[in-house]
Length: 139
Image (cartoon, rainbow, N blue to C red; front, side, top):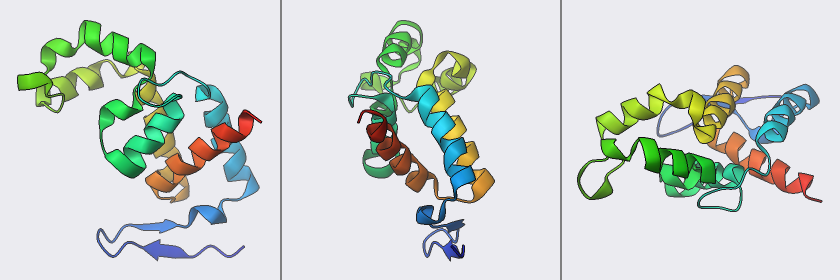
């Protein structure tokens, strides 16, 4: 299949359509899916589904949390929230960065983003495909 770069009319970002993913790329992505598959999500039933929802639909980062992430954040990082539980403060974001190795959703999002950059796929498309691939593991 011929790969042609698509240009986003809003951001001018250039990427390949996800349906052009080849077997080697898909195998690499499957490794990521297998690593994070069936981790219980705090918002969705699985973390990968929550990440796809966060990236593709809601834009609400807490949708991407695993249950373990939500517990860890509540116990260790909630002191960095702003007024009325605002989790978008600079202090909270810095605390997330400092705890990346303890938060499953951040590790997974980083791996998916790196995959997207490496193969020039749209990050949202990759997250959507990953959720579909995880569902296929269940059957």
